[in-house]
Length: 100
View 1 (tube, rainbow, N blue to C red):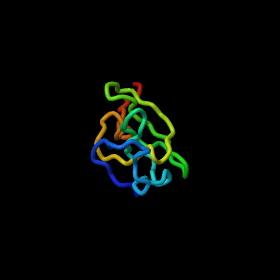
View 2 (cartoon, rainbow, N blue to C red):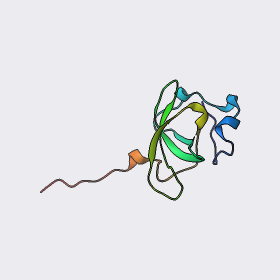
View 3 (cartoon, helix red, strand yellow):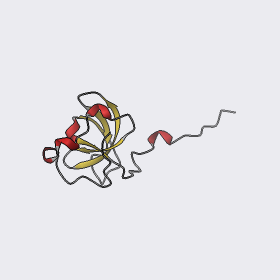
View 4 (tube, rainbow, N blue to C red):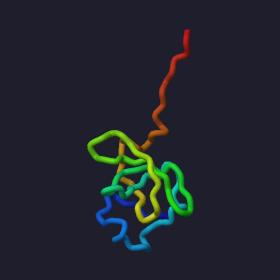
């Protein structure tokens, strides 16, 4: 199980200790993570395989949009800092009224 980061990581993927890198297959859909794409970005796991993970992430801190990309294990680490744009997306319910 990956160790949880409380804040944005400060080292780049090549600087990470291999012992601190969780295998890609240890992640599960909806796990909150940090991904490295021109800096560490908040993301959420969509899918995982033994070789890589697919992540929805925020490409920049000034935009509410998201991107989806595939990352290998050194470019991903667990996150426990809340991101209101990404976290709990599945819990947003839309109440509909039936047509009268």
